[in-house]
Image (cartoon, rainbow, N blue to C red):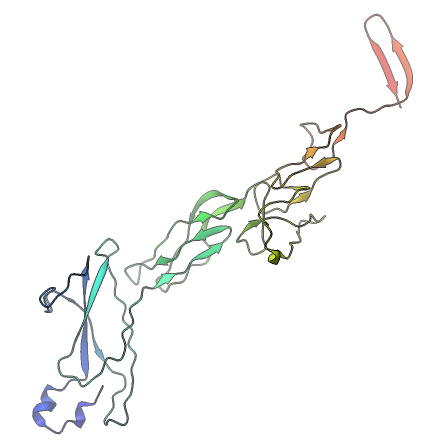
Length: 274
């Protein structure tokens, strides 16, 4: 924008300005022509009168300025908007206009996914969209996440997702995936998944009984499992009591013991075993 002080003609100096005006008009569709919407201040809403931070005097010392304006559009209002720039005597050139929404980006956190969300209409308002659990996870309490006006998610989301039985969470808490091998501690070692193999559940030979972030475990003795198993099945010829924990080994259906004594009468037989 050129300085008005460089004007030598008094008539031009009176008309010269170092500002311009920005207006907007919400619209449901692209209908504008030479007459509509009416080009007047009653139809358009004024955003601001904009002044340049830096002005130039001659043609060899041109300076560029950047101005950012925030406009609050009604959440349930028209789906489009027209912008108008009013010049009432400034010597200026508009080099570029960039129009964009401020949004909170797609994010996966705590086994929950939240979609890209436009910020609230007012600078003092927030938006709190709902989310959904990632594959192989279940919702334990209602999900929501606060999207701030600056396009940042606020701290941690509300609600909880946990991995289903047969699946375990990765270290980033973004996927419920297949384990590689069960370790004796509560920690779990994960494989290099760059081979493109399906790593979405506990592999065969492992199990995960409960929902939550716990790791897959190796099947106890004399049992086996298929992929994504919640528990291990006893091998043929072995059993597990319903009262036993899922981590207990299966035992043989038939066990022979040497008898030390055999007593009997008309109603019962008593076997004493070693």
